[in-house]
Image (cartoon, rainbow, N blue to C red; front, side, top):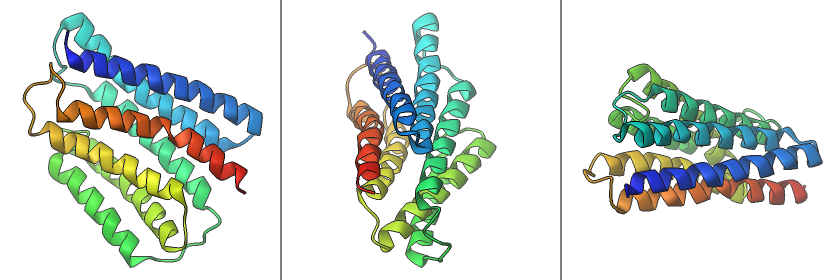
Length: 202
């Protein structure tokens, strides 16, 4: 059986469960941060579900997959909203190290056409990731916590996944690409317990 199908079905199942748990936490705690995480998980899983259905029905990897990519881009917009809510009381101080890290992440996205091949989609994703990375690194410079490190890990794994895919030809058997993708799935799912821990600490 095609391992890409197994990997993507696993990601859909894990993130849909994470979305339900995050929605429950949003209702229970009346905190919009958990709602944003729920929407993030739903968008990632729905984009992946399109991918799974295409492979299952047509038996090959879609050549044009803007449906999935727009869904994944929307997911990162929700992740950015989550980060903006977390940092809204931090002020607007400028951080040069944060700017350098954010520019580096954006450059990788544009160089590898992540969420491409459309330049517009790649540029939009680069802008969203730029903001997430900038806010996370700036917060870390001011004594941020584990969540900021974890957000950087999630972004880093997402970029690594696309970089690794450029050097892979076989997507039917387990390889480094799938190892990174499974790690990314668990990293996304771990955002909720970290957010719950952060909320409990305040």
